[in-house]
Image 1 (tube, rainbow, N blue to C red):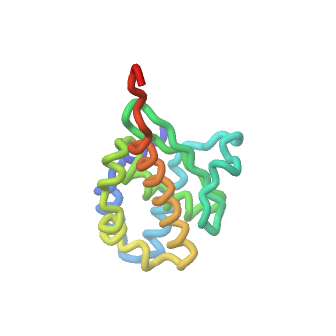
Image 2: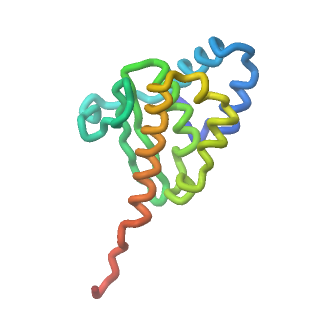
Length: 150
């Protein structure tokens, strides 16, 4: 059974695990292996509406709610990007909208020393993934609740 990123695997786990590797080649291999742990996405979800804009590779992101918590179904056509999706999911998956917005993603990426080791287009794609998740969380908080009698 695949681990649930953000629930079974935390941001602290990723930071700690990456610190064990001496070279970025080894770290990239670990990130790619993380992507292989992601559950598969149903083909019908790989649609234009679920495509993340701003990514060089094709990236699909489908938010789902379980009560107050978000779970994200993600996929990409590139192995390294799937790994980056796993790295992002540990920060946001299984969290409330407010927890998603409160998470200091810049500090997390800084602790990983990740962004400076990505090409500019991969870095932009990573930011686009994060923005889509944060926008989803933000939209859920600003949606007006239904008030009986109004």
